[in-house]
Length: 249
Ligand code: MF3
Ligand code: CO
Image (cartoon, rainbow, N blue to C red; front, side, top):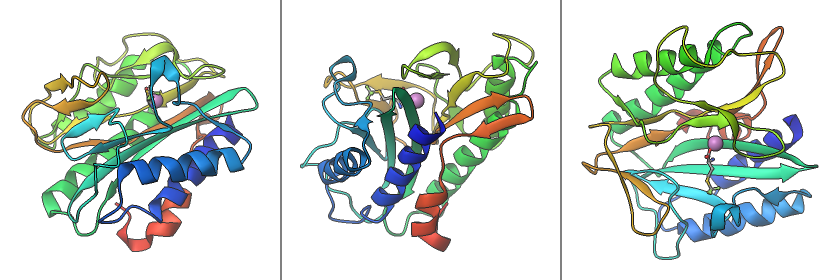
C-alpha cells in the first residue's frame, strides 16, 4: 500500500512541473499515464466503471471527476484538482491535490489552504478506537467555521486490493458515530469543500461533478493506514511540494 501510494505522490510531483497556463488537461493525463507505467504500475482509474482516463482533472467550479480533454486549456488564475490512482503489485494508491495555475486570487488560495488543513484535521482523528464520524466531524467543523461548505454527495472510502472498499468516509458527521476504526485499516480521506453552497450538479458527461452556484471548489486526498502508533500517511505531497517550493499552498 505504501509503495502504490508513494508512486501516486511521485506522479503528483511530476505533474506539478507541468501545471501552467496553456497546458491542456489531456496533456497532464498523458504525462501521468506514461509516468505510472514507466514505474511498473497501472493507472487505477483507467477503465474503472468505464472511466476513460488515468487521472481526474477538475478545474475551478468542478469539484471532482473532471475528464481530461484537449479542449480544456489551463489559464492564469485557475485552480485544478488532480486526482490520481495507481495499482502496484496488486495494491491501490489514491491521492489528490489542488494546484494553482500561476497567480490565484487570495480568497481562492484561502479555500485551498483551509481544505488542505481540514484533511490533516481529519487524519488526526484516524486512530484506533475512534469512529468514522470523528473524522468527518473534524473536517466539517474546521471548514464550516471558516465559512465554507462540505459536499455531501461524494465521500472518502476504504482502500486496499480494490480502490473503493468499506467503509465510506464522509467529510461530515457526528463525533462518536459510525464504524469503529481498527488497526490495519487503510482509508482515503478526501475533503471536497466549496466556497459557496454545498450543492453540486452531475454533468451529462456521466462523470464531472461541479458546484451548483459555479463558485470554486477544492479537493485534497491522502491515503492513510490506521496503525497502533497512530495514522500513517501512505501517500505524499512531498514530491509536488519540492517542485512548487514556496508556491505550494
Ligand atoms: N479518487 C477517486 C475516488 O476517490 C477515484 C476517481 S473515480 C474514477 O473516488 F472513476 F475516475 F476512477
Ligand atoms: Co479516493
